[in-house]
Image (cartoon, rainbow, N blue to C red; front, side):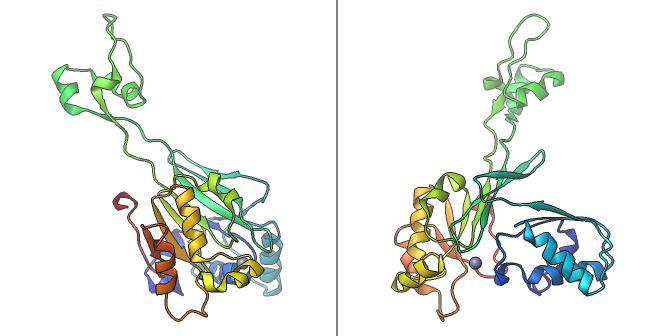
Length: 264
Ligand SMILES: [Zn+2]
């Protein structure tokens, strides 16, 4: 419903990541897959999540007599440390364990290091042949036919920064997460409660807004998005002020919120 509301073309979704099997984190998935199917999808979907998810979905579709007309690939996640789930030329996606009542993982989407950018002025000035561009962009200094070294430092500019997004929901406060999310451009961290309900947070393996901001600070992320706020709170101000006291660049998530990582 929310994908539709915000005009997100969900038939373009090809990878779906499920952190754990509490209902508020995956009960929407069978409906989404079913709708994709009814709309005639034939492009496959890869699902990443706890191992039991595959059986749950298989049973649901079998019982309902629905045959998916597209391929559902399944990659089980594990709570044993960091796991590389996906990789292509541009990005890497890893999972890592969170501290919750049932097996739960967070996810990190990391852009790979980018190539050096050619410096057009220096290239033009010294008439560097095009055949060397490829190696210069990789940070290599090739030698021309006269034995002269073409120093990449002179002919390139620093690469554009690589962005990353880490997602941590649901989890109790845990410093063990820090190495996995370190230096993220953007961190989504759950903040189900505020400090006045700290006991409740302990009991349910959730975090307070203050705890989320402490993790953000320790992991040296650039920006923190608080999410998964309990519906017991009628407004978000307490979460925001509690977290921003410790970590300035804090926002409370709202459905449909778009964040430009280049402008953080
Ligand atoms: Zn949960």
